[in-house]
Image 1 (cartoon, rainbow, N blue to C red):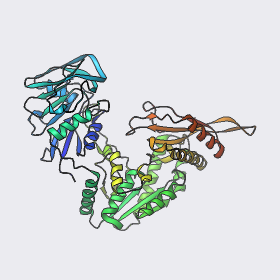
Image 2 (image 1 turned 135 degrees about the vertical axis):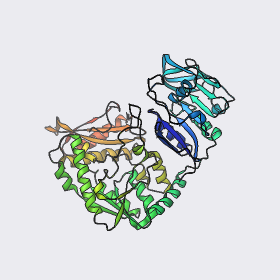
Image 3 (image 1 turned 60 degrees about the horizontal axis):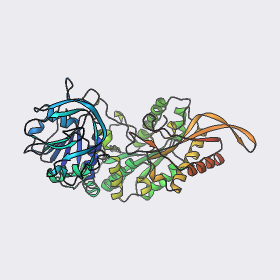
Image 4 (image 1 turned 120 degrees about the vertical axis):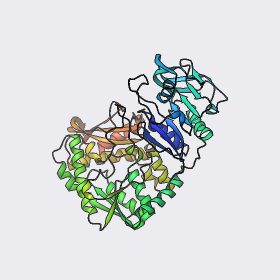
Length: 511
């Protein structure tokens, strides 16, 4: 699938995934590995990058990489904690910062003749985030850059392609960070730039054909980006041996079941739609607590999916739209790999009793890369640009118990909101949008009559990965019109509010 790769050793930094994304933006394949897990340093590895960390090298047992970085035969770029580690444990000194440097800083000096800083502008802005600072470099280390507050902002191990940066080049606020990373990977490590959507499609389809042969594969479709792209890749590889199942749990958006089925039919996929609304409403009856809702929906989905998969003779594989963030082992607060790896895939994480082997064609990709693969496959932009939609659907956007009437109301409200965003060319400027049915009623006046009806909240956020999010400043005129449309057209609603909470502290969804 790829001839070259860059290994990123994760010490628990909040920016580790961002490093991987920056590498891949250069069309260079990267993998994230926990610092204390062994990895194969074969001839495919062209460089190693050490991440930052919430830990300190001055801790009693600071996180330490298994391999001796100074003896590697490939270039090394050590960022923040990584840079401090290579200094502290090779004869240098790291001390607590007199002034904690966090946020924007400017390079007051950098060595122009250093390949790492080729093309970097004078006084370039960088992003700092550290409580310790390197106060003394080991012998045979040379200073490459400083800021006004931090003398040792960058260094090189003399006569080796090993570099340390106190700042974070992967962060957007480091204005020449892209240039520095590019210099390291392309000019110093001599990485090829062949990690492209077209090459991924070609090699993945080939590997899927080899792996699956004539076996039958079943895939649970959600209508979202990940499962749809996975389906098209598998269809390209095995054709009619792919069986897709799309379950209507009664918690989808208005007309979504029919629209998505029609869309998939136009793509030539072998898709079976299953109307299971009543069974989901039955298991949700009387449940108010969010986590219990999720578990009830997940359990019922497994029952429905298992029954449908059982109708396919000799099926051997379960395909899932798992993406790379779902499978990365992150470093926990104790300095080791997290005990739990995310397993909420688009089919809910199926149990062992199904006795199916797993195939995950997207498990090396980030969300933005999945969309690029979809474009390379010439998929409809209506699917690729679709906002994330939670697996439990509208159940976690209805606070309190679930009834068909509440679902109907919320579907209508959501439809007006989303359709309006698309009509006003605002949909693609928003990462995720939806409506929330609140468990309160309010007094209103309609036609000189007093009403006592439901309140709904509109939510629109901008984000890159859902980990953090800011509320979107939608135009007041737009919000006013949407509010009027909802109140006039949706029976049972007399008040609309707009959620202006950011994440953190508020989540994107309300439950």
